[in-house]
Length: 412
Image 1 (spheres, helix red, strand yellow):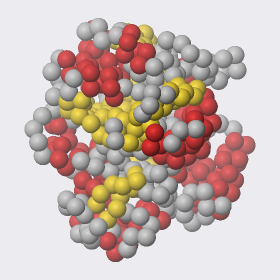
Image 2 (cartoon, rainbow, N blue to C red):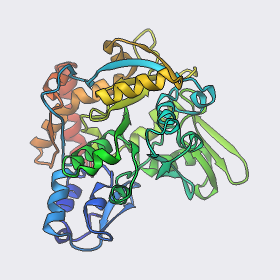
Image 3 (cartoon, rainbow, N blue to C red):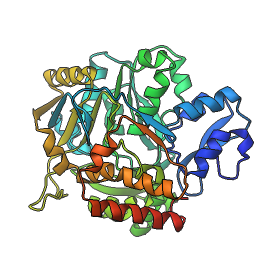
């Protein structure tokens, strides 16, 4: 739905649009009757629902209940829950034993190796994941990987919008068992829907995610291309990361030219400026509702900040459920990856951005409340405990910054 769509078509989606709270997961398309909602790229470069026919009251109510842009919920009775990192059975670092995959993937290839184990052992019939769109290389599409070659082609971070739940209805209507890989908000939406439709648990026995620092719009990739001096129509292939750790953003043109940019410049200098607003107030950048999550296990410098010097890839792997822990152990025993345990306290040094962002969610929500803006409802994310991880001065700056940016219209 665009801001200009008549609110009568879906009062809930109109409310989400007014608050700029859409995460772009695509679940709403699957909750409506076929043809009523379709995800499209809007003028800002984000995936958003476009409504072409009025939703029924039941459809609109389902979106209100299940949209991750409006609410996120975790079981508040989870034991052994960390205020920043959520439920954890084990925390490990490691990498794929296939050195080619380790080099090609974004951060050690552990996630891709685990997916390969699931396919090779017949535990699943396919992997639902995100890969580059061959028709628009800077964009994404949802694919079903059924071979190791498919997983290899999909490996690597894709810092652009994706809507892996837009075809969820079709995936549930056919037989088979699949692993689902998505952003934390995608996983949260899938879990929420699974509480109402038992087929989700049957079709997706394994749900995996990764640490997410937010979804940039396609305008971010276009800004990289502009820095390269390459037009989007000239691009034959585009990688945001990979082929080394952390790897480079790289564009290959139809006439064979290659342009590259280091990760610190591409992500830190460009793409972060285009991250959608909903991500800036997300309490779950670490995939708290997945069975297993992977991330960059960055090495730190003397000041405790991650270094992005090229090195052999290393993955942080967190198992959150017994299903995830069992999967990790079986994949390692089968030789698909190697790992070693680390203390959970080490995660903050590897992922200081995730620590800071979750700690500041409460002050940012307070600023939105002061301004009378629509804001999501969160349950079970320990926001008060997380807030104590940073100083009061940091919270004041976060609060005032949110107010200032909101008044400038920076949040849409």
